[in-house]
Length: 268
Length: 282
Image (cartoon, rainbow over all chains, first blue to last red; front, side, top):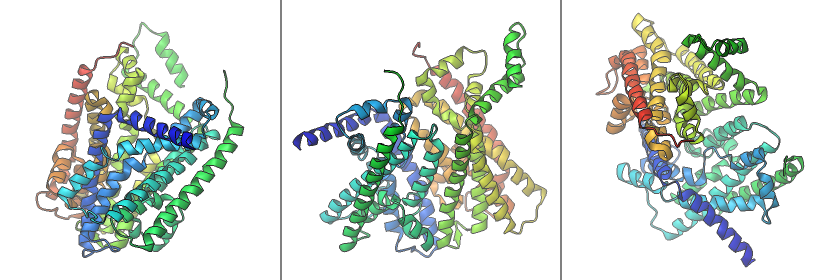
């Protein structure tokens, strides 16, 4: 058991160190997310103003908290193109991963957690600070909210990883996965609540969103952290995230086993 | 056809082919390469239609909650959105990959471009023109047609001029922003992501009524990175609406001028950047 923990820790460290090598990229990313945040804040405030100040329980302060928290979490939960495993399947490098004495899916999960741990401060803090100064955000003063909020972010990263891993595995069967990846990005970005809060959706679209794991990636952590949920609702939110994580990991596990059987790697 | 042209170019080394023939051969070979994997190409087309749909969903969800945004109705905002998306997606189709310059630098492809007797920017642009993105343009055109049908517009010559200027000069402005981004990346390399703030950020800004933006944001995207000239301002001319304070509608007639200035800046930066560049000797 302790040996497994040590392996997990080392994998996390390697993910952290690998991404900390690109500091200029982190600064650039933070700046870009901040500019996008300012644009999103303007549009959101405009919408609130013309709706008379409130939409679906959001007033200007809670809406601004939503805007800047989502901008801060984009990088840690990784809502963008990620095809590392897909590339390894295509190039055959996945054979090396499969030969390792650790489960490939779990190993990359810990590397991804290390990546997220690095990105959360340099890429997450600047948009939050700029947001706090320019439009104001709600900062929870209850340590319990901070605790469950961080746990919810962790689960969001895990669900995101499990989904991305699953999409990457289509490389076992498809030569070119860019189209699938684009469709995934389209669906995940809208349904995770990146552009507009899921609570603003018309009822039918909300039902559709909740039939996918995507709200668990971003909307739920933001809701928990901004104190939109209290008591039992927090527990229910965390449970939903956990169930999606387990479900997606299981699907990835099954697909991985099937993929291994169709994999042919040339050379030696 | 492409092959015989290629032979024509290589066989007659003593006679330099006309620039037109050369670019035509280059472009034809790229297009063939991209469309040779039919299933992937079809999925890409589908994915890009999805992007158009996704962005429109955002607007639609907002209007499920409000009746007007920044002083414009749903149909009017949809026209602004469609203009911005038509101009941006066309620019993205033609030059959208040039902001991946750091990738070309790392792979040494840029060094190969430099030793050939043709414009480096021209080679970079023709290296990856993406016809798969046309479905995004078509999605935006569909939004425009449906939205404009809901508006009662008397088409004066001035309004028709504003309409025509969007796909030509609006596209030129976004294309100039991409080339500006590429030029800056000779210095940025690892920090290249920052230019997304005004290429993709510009497209985001342009898709909504500019009356929503305050001070710094509005000034920056009007006069520094003139994204607001691609959609909102020409749309105001067409609607016959007056803009917010400090953003008069007649500015919408100056889109060609802004396109010219943007290209001047973009090409200047590109030349400076290219001169700044030193290869790794690979």
